[in-house]
Length: 187
Image (cartoon, rainbow, N blue to C red; front, side, top):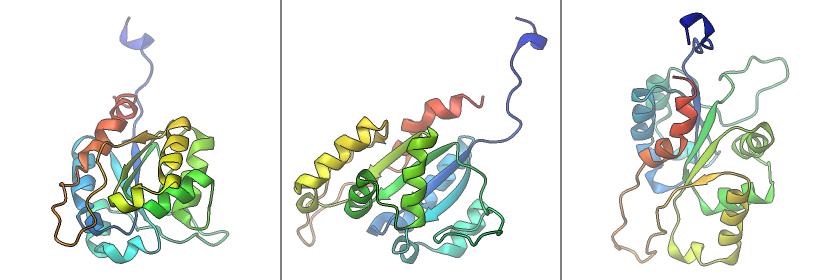
């Protein structure tokens, strides 16, 4: 195949939305942002209203070069982020996982996640919750529904809710591993 017969490569970097929820590890989201940028993604952050309080907004905006989105824009306001080529929900809380699977759209983050399914946007989720929450039947049903929707679910096991219990490190890069085939489309 000659160079003239090859399809044109995209002239922009693929755009990854990182949806951040209110979990203790959220303050380390810079780990995911940096890893994503190093592998070829442009990154924008969408935080749940509660998740916004868990991150250093100024540092995240400086690192991404984009404003953090947490609330809907007003009619006529420009879109602050380009459309997503993929989405990583990390960390994802019990509340967000269950509301997303049920189709609730009461926050900007949930609205984006619900629309992603209908738009065919590849989405990965890294749950971050304790074993007591994960024992609730709604959680497993929600994960099953999200998987049936094509959402790629991380492998991290829920942690022991006992105060002082050891918690396994949060493997931020797993989201990128799950979304790697999408990134390959841009190379």
